[in-house]
Image 1 (cartoon, rainbow, N blue to C red):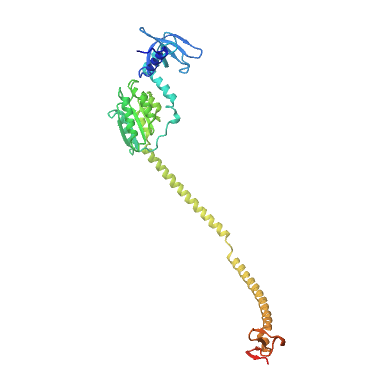
Image 2: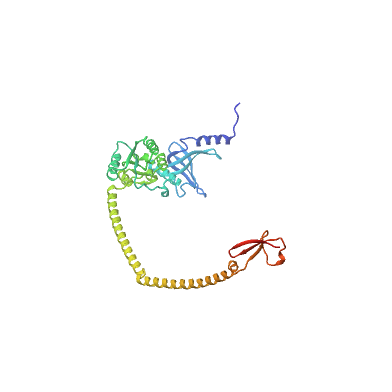
Length: 392
């Protein structure tokens, strides 16, 4: 048997179905404002109606806080369809409203610009500097349009060293946004790419609309190298211009801003060469002057050779005298010492007739008759040798 559901369960289920519907969660509605009221909290409640129906609507205080609506005003409103569960009423929850007079495309553009801007996609602080000397430049544009030829002509004239990597795409019509995103993805996989140019000629807001699509803006935002936008003419502005690292008013201007001018660079190198040559000559001249000055200083600081020779001679004479005195004193001491040693020499004593008597077995000097007995053998040393004797 079927089960009876609580009212809240049914309402919640219907709300979930509505809020998960792809169309009803990103919806633009045009209608006339009626029954407009504003709560103390700042929420705005009103109805959007046409001759056939009325849809209860709400614009919460956090969305467009300064916006005022008026009964009878026709507007474009963006938001999603839901159910106010406490009353079970269908309602349209708005997040962006503009008068119908601005046109739907302009209203959509303003809503997307405000939403992506709040996410930081257009923040100037995140924009990257362009490489000074790009070697590989990717170009997203129509392969048959004038924009590509303009870019090629400018690059050939200004910076012929660059290689152009074309990623062809439609730049107008319903399929343009998808093809531009696909072209950017293919370029992102190119090795050694230095920057990319997204370009097309001018046109109406409808012609340029592909470059206002959210998926194109996010593809440029996430591109791995700097992107230059050259979409339209100088007065045209798209969201691609705002998210790009650099905005150029035309495709030709984009190519100019992407590259240096080889002729200006050559002239700058000539000037630099002359400046370096001049600086080298000046440095060499200054170094020569410094060397000459140092030589003069060294000549002045060098000693006077004759005076130095005289001083050295005097010093040598003083040293000779000192050595003579020292050697004389040492000679006298040596002579005195030698005489003393000669007087104490035992051999000299033996020459005077003395002898040294030792016991032969023990080699002990006999200096008393008490140290010998009959039968002891004695060794007697005299000046020219020794002999032995026996005590009897």
